[in-house]
Length: 264
Ligand code: PEP
Ligand code: MN
Image (cartoon, rainbow, N blue to C red; front, side, top):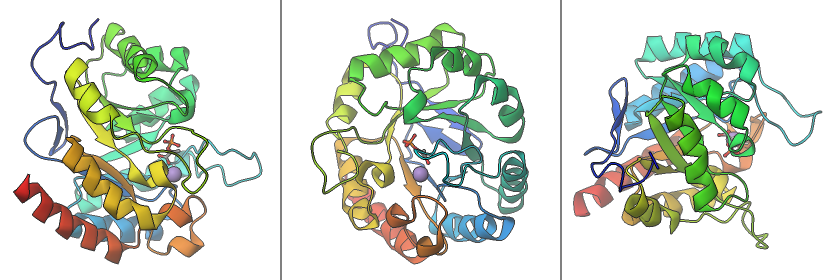
């Protein structure tokens, strides 16, 4: 299998602008769950960059559980994201949920995200493979590591080897956290695959309180990067406010991660 260590012994390094996943550095992707306005994304980006974030995230096409929830600004959101990324000097990533939108979104962003709900949308996986853009492949809500790696295999087999895996928590019986962040997936993936693997403690826990400790635990487990939701005013966020860090809490986390990285 193309994703296996047997096929390729050397770690794959996926480069997006100045950020490299799988190399020496541990890039942090930060930003709101959803792009809500230019001001919202710009404020977040400025503070995230000052704190040391390597990439800016934000959803323009949101896969919401309820059809009555905010669905994203769509193309207007992509325009905001591209403008803010260029202005602040950060590469940008956004989620693609529909094979018909892959080309459009790829025109605006530096990396495409496949969300947890689409990990086994094989038509979509084949479509993003054709773009040659780096892909962030989140683990499915209830996917085994094997199923997740096979999803990555679709992208690799489609001719795109720029794949970064993202552990974002899986569904268990536990209800005190939104999902159960499976950090054991990190060393397991590093052992069986050459692909970089990052961790998203925001969706993994569902509460901003648990983001800081689990981000540190992820680095200790050997993660190649982090994805953290940050919002200038979480209580007013149109999606995932409860798990979003304020810019101040994000800055604090980045300071602590720096100390931890030096010790590892
Ligand atoms: C997101 O990153 O905002 C998102 C929807 O993530 P996930 O697919 O992991 O739920
Ligand atoms: Mn989110």
